[in-house]
Image (tube, rainbow, N blue to C red; front, side):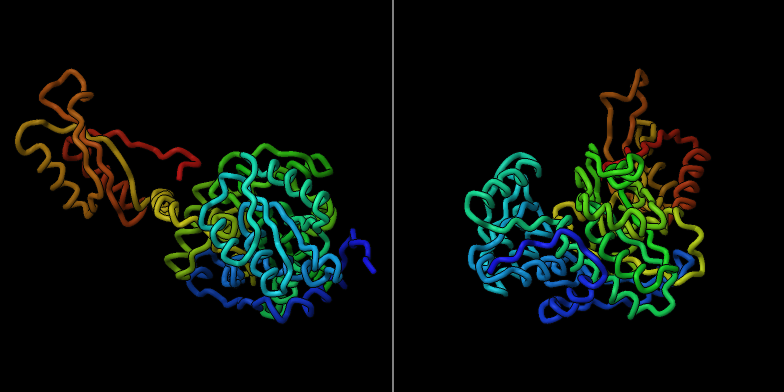
Length: 416
């Protein structure tokens, strides 16, 4: 006999979810990072959920939702709209549990995620130019074909499943003072906050959004979930048009503080994690570290803090650009135009000054056509690598002392 789906979520659901998914979801480690602790000034513990089989925390909710289907719904199958991690999680665990899965993806969905979902046996439907189109198509097919629609972040079983991360955190980090969680649709922060506040209400739950995708803040300001127009962001996993109704209801009174982080901070956090932890994470996951290194939570100095590194599915084609953006934000790569003599020895003088100052030249381009009225001068576009911002400033000073005028090119916010 079919049972009506539950429309609410409570702490008991999170506890039940943990038992339900234990046979198929990795209880990811949460080690303390000495390097990041030194960098941030707190005792920092990293919840490594990007080590899940499909690379994100979404597996927790997906398996919990799938395992609660009755026999009729299991046989009919499920459907979801997703351009990324939710689709991967459903496809993988649907295959493991023998449940047919259909995922509707926008036409712009990354090819690697499309092919991976198909590899897991999912029926992948490419439809529409945006996520809204994919949602409408998935709901239409659910109604027409008798499939169960599983929402990516506003389903009670999904929220309860994500909350299992909170239970693990409390066990792995005794005397935890605060946890930092990214917010997109709100499912993860709702589940984690529910699990933590039920056990230790004194643990501070801090939510993080990208400045370019601050839908949760807009909803808090309005007092209820509202649509939000996002801008392109490195934390594309957080770029949800509207937070979930149930997720917002659960999270709004349990999230103690909300932080917005910029694109430079996200890029720098990705770089820090690669260099210091040898971990590759997507922008949404790195936003938690960005809140710390961006100086947004100074009150956490000296405290025991956990960050949720909840996804590692960054597009390989953009990693190099993100790293370079992080190097720029860190003062380790800069670009300028120098005006030098076009006579023999002009370029040699520039190269000598840079070498003596300890800078490494990454790229150099002559520009004679647009160098102004002085035909004896030439503009040279230079990209150099330096140790840090202080070293970069010293290089610029050395060029000035040598009589080589330069114009610095500031990178635009949001450029990757």
